[in-house]
Image 1 (cartoon, rainbow, N blue to C red):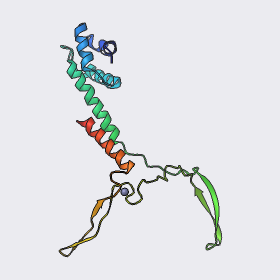
Image 2 (image 1 turned 135 degrees about the vertical axis):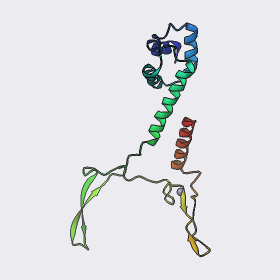
Image 3 (image 1 turned 120 degrees about the vertical axis):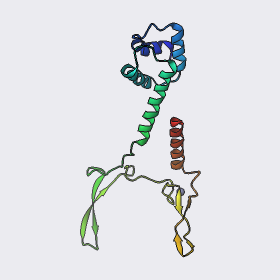
Image 4 (image 1 turned 60 degrees about the horizontal axis):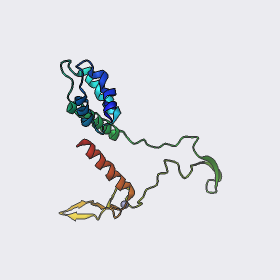
Length: 174
Ligand SMILES: [Zn+2]
């Protein structure tokens, strides 16, 4: 954001405190470098609602609020459940198939190959969980099921994407 952008966004809110000098605006612009304008808008409306009238908020305080809002946004995004695909009655096409054993036709709903419920997995062995059942261990009269990492662990693009997402989330929370 340029100094002009910062003045445009913060000016109306800060007007109640004092006349902000050009030098001070430069400080605000430096502190708000790289901030998402939507986060700044939310931070400013929070300041409008909660900040006292005596002093203008410090650049670092505004930046801190923006970062907190960004983190909350990212966490809310990450917590959203992944929508489960469903089959609508109108999806695909109807087809009748004669089944000799039943002596009659049955109606089938045939879905297109790219239908979301027909999700393909990158690894059939672990179905993209990254883990497979290991050997069954017998110890001291007990039987233990074990799991081991699947051979696809490093190469599986689905797992790689999940790791990248997790790293992104951790970076956002730091
Ligand atoms: Zn696998």
